[in-house]
Image (cartoon, rainbow, N blue to C red; front, top):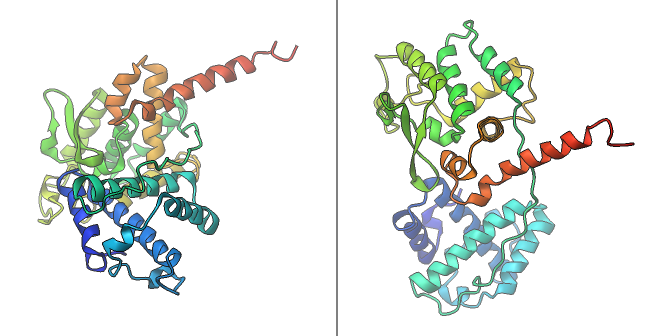
Length: 327
């Protein structure tokens, strides 16, 4: 784990900038720190500033701005190549690190004026493989809801509400865990969630969601809820320890119910339920792609367009399955 104490001052200044000005989430800032620390450790090896090859033993606090000013685009490309050859990093991993490096050097050159030349100005993002998202069919989604409503589970109303929100609203794990009761407008059937980049958005709740939430609130613990920094007293979903439910607990709940429904947990997960909601909305709801973008909280329409590819692929499969196809 990288800490601020191990960073050079200019890196910490960048991280402060991403929090205060760019309003990035703590998880995003942590990723920036990890990516850039790894990049700077590689630079020490590439510039013969250390004989240590184990990254965990390389310090970066002593890397001065004079060294940063010597970095060229070729050095960044070499780092991305190193990730491929040494760690067999996927294109998505390299793309994230390239993005971190690009934002970092933009800050140093254009915002903080600490360097004159931005070596990452022409840095391209590694091309990503386009893969269709995995998702549950309508039948499997209904099966998952049915097994989750099993009253043998003492927390079935909570768990059913969780699965219902995932499958109907397409929200992210962090968004669901972060829901407070006062975020819900019961009269207007909507709630406010905090998405990526700490951006608020409204999520509209259909009848199934409202019914599941109300049924759970009726049995939600009223007494003994922990007073803590998680603001558990306001949290919609509570664990058995009477505190805000954790990401891991929600993941466990989803995995358990998927297994109960006879579904492959290596293929499906919490995030796949988000894909499922988006796919079902697009396929059965005649939803405009811009409306779907708003529902999912995607910053770019290109991210949402993958669901049109799902529909296109199904159309192709339908034509290929025509019994006259091979005549």
